[in-house]
Image (tube, rainbow, N blue to C red):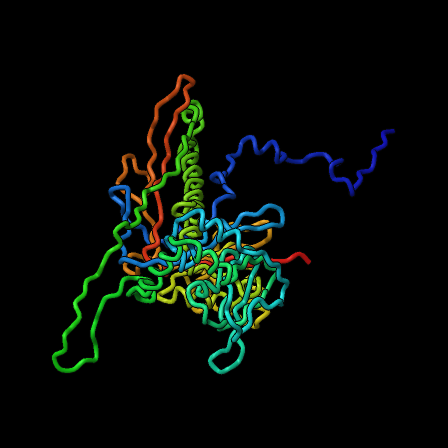
Length: 471
């Protein structure tokens, strides 16, 4: 008699197969495939929103009115352990020393600066007291506190690494501090007493002559932007003698040459011949290569040391945050700098998250705006757009850019040249380079680009914005 073993219902694999299995069926089926995916592709808002100017000659010249620039930079320092010294030539950033080039005298001046350390809350100078020295900020953040319009105490400004104050005491010994300078963070500051400066002036004929010329010709006829003034008359009556004038130009305008990002794409002929269905192998290789080039292009437009936006913002238009994280007040500060038709903010996605947290803390809920069918966050109606090319430092700080764009608005513009030989996209061409002895087909893929800031107040940067703290 045959005994049949019972089937374990909890283990269906022990049951006999009643139909064709999936693994076998797939041998007769056509797999539906996606095109190759690439995680490095980002939204690239900067490339999308920058107005692109045709640069047919490969070089773009930005002509401006003549400007008188006096001490608009930042001072740089050297350090050996905990000791900090100012670079002598950098003292030329102070208005009274602008253009003075005697290295020996500048070196002696630099040696007279003494180093001081301040803790948060310490007062460096106090309102109403005699101003008797100039201060250089090597590291840290300092607030200038003074009386507001209604008599209350308010923060008049913030100074950070490389900034300075009190340089007017070098040419005028009868000034008082018009504000109180208070350390916000731990600060390293170098200071030079007026008495030490006078001592060097008394022993240097060249420095004394330079200061006399500065005092005599320091009040140049210029407007609030430093441009040579255009003499006009208004509100007059009768037949007065009208002023004559002309608009002077910068004799050495800046020129931007197109930069390039390139690579050589290689595809074996056997791959191109045999594996081109259902997708063209060369076309997909080229698509991903171009995506990588465009990502590099946006990175260069932000970070390039020559034409990158982070490096081309005017020093007067770079401001630190008030308290560390990027707050609504900080964004308002940028809008006050780029107030003529601001286009958009640009920030790292993590910085945008920090902005959102600060808005929530302040009980502020910004609106969203429609940008090409995308709902994006905005502040005061100005879009806040993500850009992962803006660097985040090891200390978890980053920057926020605000810009005005377009030639007609005297803003920021992108530069490219179209009509290139073998052009594949505007400003990008793909040129066949031939086939090697190993049957490898080569294509040269090139993208040409640059960017220009037409006038300084088209671009402002919020620096050292904290995007989060541990704990």
